[in-house]
Image 1 (cartoon, helix red, strand yellow):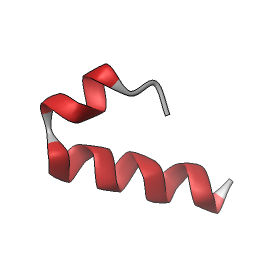
Image 2 (spheres, helix red, strand yellow; image 1 turned 135 degrees about the horizontal axis):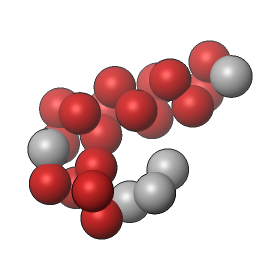
Image 3 (cartoon, rainbow, N blue to C red; image 1 turned 120 degrees about the vertical axis):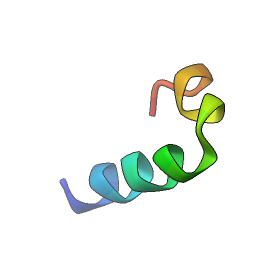
Length: 23
């Protein structure tokens, strides 16, 4: 799913936010 990869990349940039948000 392209949208899922996009969310993962955005989360990676945010850092700790990625851990708090399961998506």
